[in-house]
Image 1: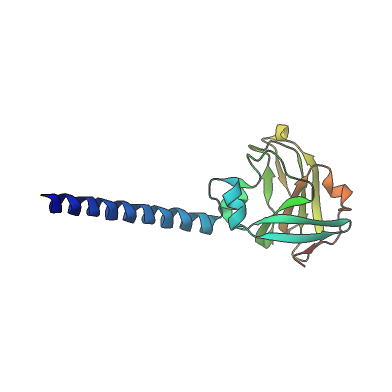
Image 2 (image 1 turned 180 degrees about the vertical axis):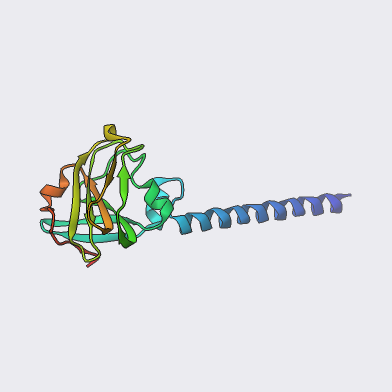
Length: 166
């Protein structure tokens, strides 16, 4: 009887371990492929950071390059520190809309061509602007979100060149 009980206990441990491993693999797989993990701190760990050189200084930007990570963006975050940003990498030139849904602070949105030329800017977009959508007028491959009033402070204007990742 004691042997049967030990066998059942061992099976239960093995079954629980298998389910735990399967859950971690499934969750981890989704987290790494979408780069949206459900917690800001974990999201930052699975995303690349890229240095962007601006006319006046440089910033470190979190790169969002999957559909899920671009949809989430900065939504729900309490702030964006100075000298930090979020770089939306769309991969191909196009027109891309942004709205302020679930945003908690104002931002500047700067659209960039594939070669890093500023093609459009929205300054001081606020959470109260929702449901307005901001869409770039000229094709862009990237969009850079910075804390409000940072674009001018960094010397960003239409036609300005920035360097991404060097």
